[in-house]
Length: 137
Length: 134
Image (tube, one colour):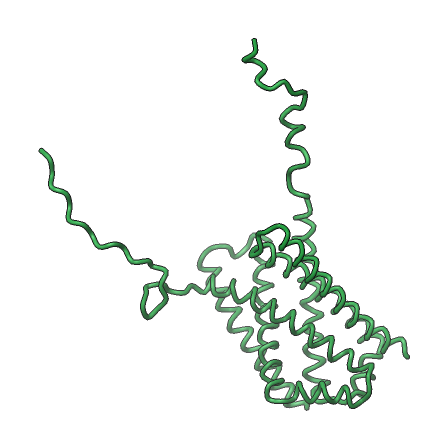
């Protein structure tokens, strides 16, 4: 009557392991959600930079040149490029959030489509801004 | 008879629950975040266009002239207010999501929001000073 105990199965491995060791695959939905928050915080630091730039207007011309020189340095340009992308990403994805708030585009295909649109749009707008910046310099 | 009165209290269930719920400020926060977000769409585009097309590598005189124009000063003031208000709301959500000890949460909220108000005041003062003239 008594059945034999089934052979012990191997303990399941946690799926939350990142490639190449695990099977966890990123989704654009969560990645963008995390990036929205990070870009928002980065833009908060950028607002600090903007305030420094504005305050330098009240100082000597050399004070303002110092801020401009910092922004024009390689490090400054990398920061500005990052802030430009963070801004356009946060802006585009913010509009995506506002659309959701109206109850639209909440199906899974639309959520994914909007996510890719945000990524493409943020890159295109960043490039356009930098091309314009160098063009009109 | 006593089983009908397990608690001899004159306070009913509603009276006991009252005042223990949320502060009812959630909608105000949510709405203000959306309003500032919508306002920041045109303001941000204007700002990025201005600094990238007009002001790359500009010296102090040129930026000063730009900011002292009424239209620029008005838009810049609105941009600063909307930006820092939106930032304060966003940072509040981040802190509330990750900091759970009540004392630390309250302290960091007051500290970060105070800092944001201070920086916003500095930025706004600069614009007014330049626009109104020194």
